[in-house]
Amino acid sequence: MAEAATANSAPHERDARRVNARGDHDVRPGDIAIGVVIGRTSEYFDFFVYALASVIVFPALVFPTFDRLTATILSFSLFPLAFLARPIGTQIFMALDRRYGRGAKLTMALLLLGTSTVAIAFLPGHQTVGAASAVLLAAGRIGQGFAWGGTWDGLASLLALNAPDKRRGWWAMVPQIGAPLALLLASGLFAFFLGTLTPADFINWGWRYPFFVAFAINVVALFARLRIVVTPEYDEMFRSRELTPSRVPATLKAQWRNIVIGAFAPLASYALFHMVTVFPLSWVALFTQQSLTRFLMIEMAGAVICLLAMIASGLLADRIGRRSVLGYTAAAIAVFSGFAPQLLEGGEMGEIVFMGAGFLLLGLSFGQSSGAVTSNFPKRARYTGAAITSDLAWLFGAGFAPLVALVLAQAYGIVAAGAYLLSGALATLAALGLNKELARRLD
Image (cartoon, rainbow, N blue to C red; front, side, top):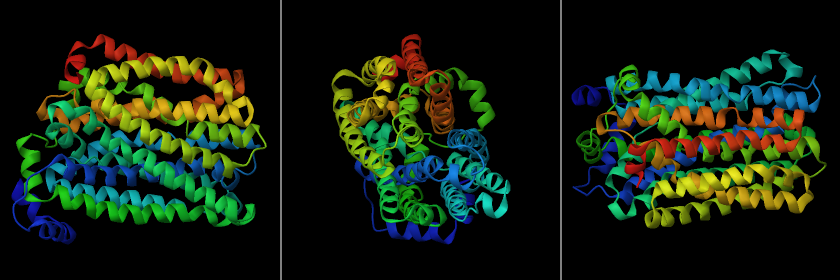
């Protein structure tokens, strides 16, 4: 199998091997972390560029014949398509991984991700192609989801396995750093174009540039990750740790309990993820007269708070245990869900308080959510099981969050938007409380 993978290697994979063939070197957590952070930042940047556009751009570009609220709901209805397609992509790309190797799989997945993202950048509006605009947007979104299913490179699992015993909370936090970095960059780009272009120019062409930037970042991330995953040292580490792809149906059959528990354990942070990024932006756009540029600047500040809170989560987890951090933050998120959404109706200061507190809790909880996903499997099932678990956690916890929160808020008032967040917090608490094996592994 190894020889077959080498024979089928693309030229840039062989170039990556040559770049790293400069003598023996140890595989250290810090080396793995570089590839993890770069890879996660590129994936989250694609994610946030689409998420912000789903509020700021697509309602006016793709659904201009509807009122603003209905257009935004329709835009949000396309949002979950990527999360629905992602598990299917995982199964397809795991088969490619077994046949051609991790490097080939990663190359094809990131090529599809970049192509889908750039295709959205060229999206014609409703005034040009009519209802076909929504169909093309849905196709691009599904393509992104398939691609995300193949971007699982196993580096996060390898990082967790190679981390020192007393520093596992810290190294579990590292892969998550990509999220606030990506949000900071995506929000900054949209804020710049919104603040410097006329509304007509922004809708016509300005919004497209962040999607082109996403493609460029994917190219950089591809080579950075290939430098790691295709080298002989890392290939041996993956194999010695049994981080090799198993068949998805067999993994589901043998590990379904762990997959279910692993998918529900981080739901509090995954639900909060969208409740402080996409949903409040839609609320401000629809129900206030405030500047979206200003609110994007608040999101940028929130990303910094999130980053600092993630670092704190790593320190806390090494002192009190990752399960404890997840449990305490889930309880705090449950409390937060009961009153915090109303702060969005409290004017500028209320919004700042909501965003600051929300991003603080997000950093503390999300910083350790990868530990819940990767540590609940035996070695032979970890590579594929962790990928499936991550797919389902994002689907249940985040995929429908903007749509459900906006529909609930519109129908029953903004206090109802916290119901979705509360459900995620309760799911996390139940998962942590009911599964003793998960508790033992996380601590």
